[in-house]
Length: 340
Ligand code: DAH
Image 1: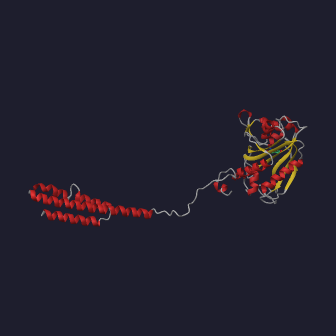
Image 2 (image 1 turned 180 degrees about the horizontal axis):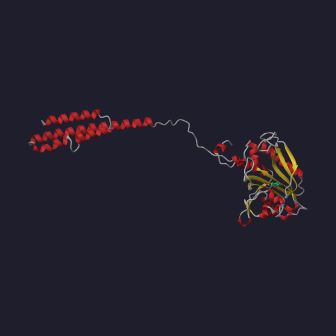
Image 3 (image 1 turned 135 degrees about the vertical axis):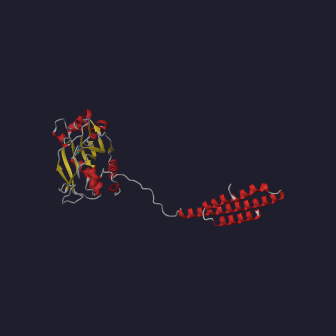
């Protein structure tokens, strides 16, 4: 009786193991067949009631059934594990021979690029690159440049005044004064950097913009020297002939002073927003250094002369790349910046 029950349980369990469809189903079979409440455990408990020789025979039978079931369970378990691994390998397959997308790399801002280009050009012409403070005193920004208090030229530049009488420099010209004081004549220097004006912002005006100041002090410097350097500069920048015109211009720190204009490279002449419909863009105010300016910085104007210019770097970048709105440059929009 007991023999048959054991054998029947064994074959029934083996069949269930063979047809199990998932690890969960397999576990259920294991619990039914070998668990504490299973048939086999039940049978072992009943063994105590048997005669000794019967007991050893049934014991062997039970052991062999238990062993067979455990082996079958293990084999099936392995099969499930292998199938799961195969499925995962199929699903997560990666083709390592495909080209990688590559890292997204940034690049220099167009203003930085043009600034570095010009620094290189001027260094090759024997100029030193100087840096100066963005917060200036009234003396360096105005007085030392021949713009005393009450001088109407102070109104030409709307100034951001700071507490304590200091200001955000309205141009890079104060670096001329630092350069003259520190290096003395003869002197060839440029000073690229930011300048600030309290203006209402539109397509061609920003409160923050970039300039490049240049100055040469030597014996017998004339307008011819000035023109030579300005032409060399413009050819290097635009890598082609640009049409220029020279107008008299007033700046207290130069005498004579000029406005060097270039024909608008955006519209080529007929007029647009950048050139304010005039066809010309003021690009390069310049002149011969006013003797007062030299004198204030301790340089004898009888012995030394000089030229100076103030290049609008921001405007230059707009001309070179055909940008029609100055606000794009500092807007931080990557869709704009990625085009350069
Ligand atoms: N500092 C002037 C400005 O920002 C530009 C300028 C004009 C600089 C004439 C010069 C110069 O050196 O000679 O408006």
